[in-house]
Length: 471
Ligand code: PM9
Image (cartoon, rainbow, N blue to C red; front, side, top):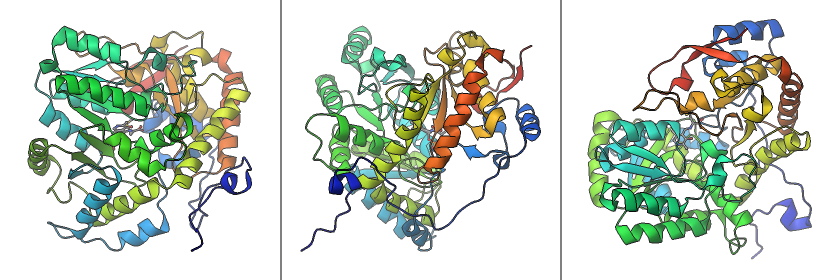
């Protein structure tokens, strides 16, 4: 039989170019409004790109969350939604897709990632327990804190250095974790909160060697590992590309192997799973599952829909299968890399190596005349929008929030702006336009004075805070 498995151009002809394994059959018009209109829009948005109207945005790189283009197969699946209140057939498709692709036993659907974070935090954290993790994520840490947990960063030091070229900057520093265990005792550790890739570090991966060693260490103390699997397919791509011994493995095989070292995962299906809404929690432990399945009916919906419509669950199930196609994930990560390498070639300070879902501008180096409490990354995101209608997201002091004990700003080492690439949405020409916009803002960097915060909400302030320009 002829082998009809898809191959890349590189596999077939030894060429270096890659191309998307799809063609476009529906488009959504976008437009660039005038400079004057952009000035008004960002002023009215309190210099916070989250508060802009999307119709005032030209190229929207705010997030890769829920912004993917679904495939024709996913749209076809949407028509097969079984909208029964209980026992929807689409739930069983979703359950099967997660079990076969990620390998976990028990599944609880949720409306999106933070619904799952809420459940696992409430179920697995006792007040006062520590939650070591490979760098914080905004919503994840907040749910851990709301459950009474104390997050402790145990990522390797290289992750906090934007210039370090370490191939697996998401790795857990096992010495830091061991020191925490020695200090507080294993019984005071709720679980290890492991993310692959690490969003706030720049979309940086965790190696298979690291997760295997982590498993071994945790086994010595009976500590569970729960995985934030939001961008684990992208993490698997980096393992395939960089880690000796995995070049001939498929993305699906690598993903399954990685997950086998963990006890469960929470998921924002809005990212890797290629849908506009959805999430899930998956665990191997029956006791944890039963508690989460009970809580889901309080906060999300019945345990066979968890806040999603039947059609949404069908789209997630199909998205999971598409996510692990090697040609898809290679094109996805290479598009991000294309933008990143262009910026590096032009001398723009970015987090290196380029990560899986976004290019992160180093706002600290970009505006080296602005101290962190003048919000350099927030300023840069606003300037980028003003210049060109490109929308990005702050990932620095505003995102880090305040220390719950002292009430002071947290001052993260990384002060970044994220150019996040939605999946299957923009073309290479959009990447070129974005790079030119960044260059224009970089050339104007000495004329920028920073921002002051004039409104600050209590939780996840980056979403809703408002700012005014400093004189
Ligand atoms: N991430 C992002 O843009 C959505 C908005 S929060 C700034 O990166 C991880 C690693 C995420 C994530 C969301 C969630 C929460 C959990 N883990 O947004 O609730 O990147 O579906 O997922 C966003 P939901």
